Length: 290
DNA sequence: GATCGGCCCTGCCCGC
DNA sequence: TGCGGGCAGGGCCGAT
Image 1 (cartoon, chains in turn purple, blue, orange):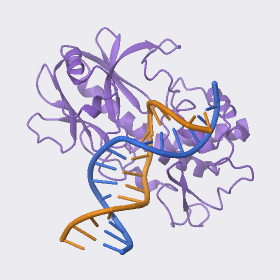
Image 2 (cartoon, chains in turn red, green, purple):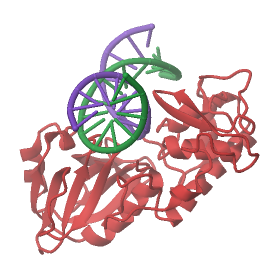
Image 3 (cartoon, chains in turn yellow, blue, green):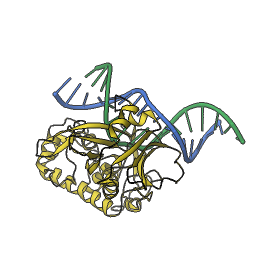
């Protein structure tokens, strides 16, 4: 389940491999992988061949390959199970290989592998991000992520203040802050000792800042360790898993003692998925917003 | 406009 | 052994 630290690990690995390379062939093996590219797979391939990749950028869980001319980019999202792999051309195809990209100089190829097909790629135009940079038009509504050097804590605090919902819903809302998924939301809330249903607009600026600090810390730690890995679905461009799961405190720890107080971590249904919390450290607020 | 719930999709796991 | 149902979850879209 790739989240921001995992996507950043993938982005940096890809940047080293694809920057300066020219696309020579594109093969779309599953149409759903490019469903957001409305003109379809033939158009997708035709418009990529011959283009040079000049850089690889990221915002939240979206990453994109900037093409020569700096007017367009290939936007990718890993979804729940996507992998962007750099493979020798003679390596056997992965079972869930969806897109293959070959380069003019030959050598290793780029493969988009995705078991559950929640991820995908699309060609998109680059537009101003309002701060002197360029982002794909489909990403412009996404807030800056907590690891972005231009991320402003004041924006995060005011975004929380404007939401009439619970804290976790707000954290998962990519227009409030991007890059946070279920895992890091639970971990950051555990660290900040906040219940997921605490009203987002009821958090003081100081507590909001504290929560943001916990988000940044847990993500930085995961990034330093190569990202979180729960199964073989998340891997870097070389197919290697991260190791951060050994240090998770709440997520996936149902019936395990809370590392802080010893009470057993509980799992509760939340937004058609699960939330993990310590019932003592993260007490249910009276004015909870579920 | 803001918020919320349903859906997409596949593989694994568990119970019957 | 085999089948069916539940679960995992990011983002989009329609309903409220």
